Length: 139
Image (cartoon, rainbow, N blue to C red; front, side):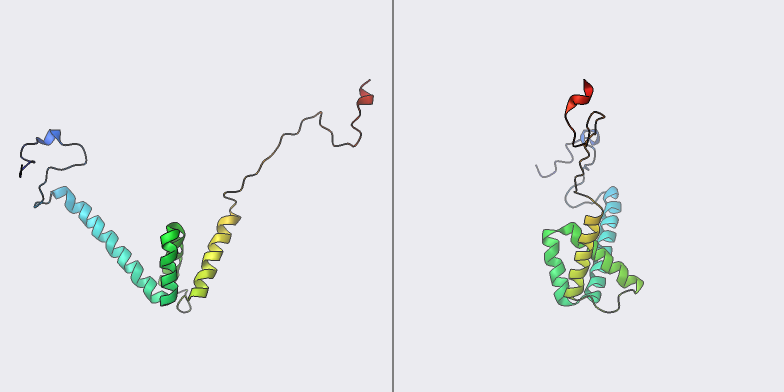
């Protein structure tokens, strides 16, 4: 039972799986590993930029927000990182500035109209807005 991969023919392996044992690495996994390490390096660079651009209190607050609303926190992280790389940040982002950015993001999201339901009712020709609703004129 130690060498199960020897008993399995290559055409019996489902798509997306490999017959590699625990000690070997297939050639296809090297390309996937490179992508994964590149993604980890990009994330590490992003975190380094955020640590330089933000005060420790603001960074801690952003991490707490990330636990609850990951999409909102990632948008703010992207904003701060891009501003820092472009040199548009006058100094470190403190907790108050972070709150302003979050509120601005909320205002921008609400102004887009998402989540708001607009009901438009049909108006018929026989509906009249007149105060005279008696049908005497029809006779």
